[in-house]
Length: 448
Picture 1 (spheres, rainbow, N blue to C red):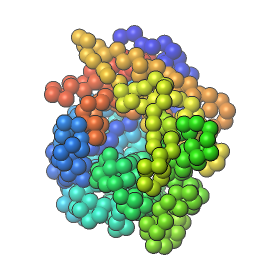
Picture 2: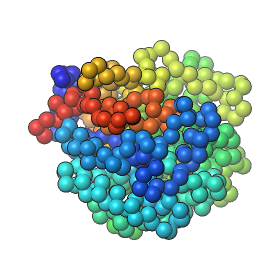
Picture 3: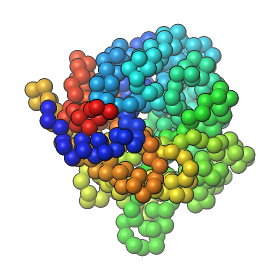
Picture 4: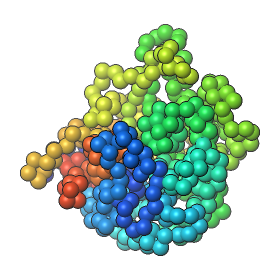
């Protein structure tokens, strides 16, 4: 299939400067019904009527548990340097916090070894949202003990796999783990509670810091964070709209940057949380801000922020503007990626390498014969890679870019209705079919 020349050109220009990879997540692709995997709170969430599109769950997903070699071959044959994958906490520890599942250990042993055999660098994430059910039933991320259990889980991973992992981040997208899931209720556990939000937003950061310290004790020296970023535009020039856009930025973005790199939380967000914050939370800030070796940015879209007197605590609502949109109804605005890369380098971690750990789009892809012409995805990748190229020219130390995602997969509350992959998956047969975007990446990376 003929690739998009402009996309392949920008890939070729960037390829000598940065690592290129693809990213996935355990619950979205592995299939939780295989290999003795335990239940997570996503299994419970999906069982609740109305929570997930058509009641879909991750029990089968892409059956990566059985097809991982095929999937790694796709990564290798495209020419990618690295694979950002996640461990499944309930797969490794399905019943207790100390009794390992031998099938889970064997699966990740085989997966990592197969990456290394193909010269694919393993970039690991320890937690991509599949919290074991037993911890969720005891309060999940509202409970300080969950952060301690996560540190113990980190120790187990390091003992079994740490020497083969090129790079590690403890938590994927802590905003989604906390605010999206405990205030807006869109993800497991599906709460809409200010107290639960304040506690989860702190304890997920504590879990990160405790995990980093455990990995340091094991001697690992390539540890980072993976923060999702959403660009923000006030709906108008009014003072109140500007104020609410700043508050949105504090909740979504700066809460995590400020705590990791400055050891503090934004005052405007703390003022809303008030007494809902955990007692003596300040004592944890030195752990949360433990030094890192790199910073990761997941970026997709923006919100237009409008004041809303009916919103009980924060007083704003998030709208979409008039820009072109993806199949998720997310606006396409690569300038937002430039903004966050520049701000991270200038205000937070000027001496650290930065990785774009996720970037991509959902598209309404259809098989026509044996081909998928996902031209909108080609344009999306091209425009965002051009933004990366521009900030590198200005001195921002971007060292890697991971396309989301390798495969069409379980897209959380959207089930199997949204397709982010550069490889099409037939969820009935598990047949993989590379899309036009896959071939564009392959052309751009050829001959590295």
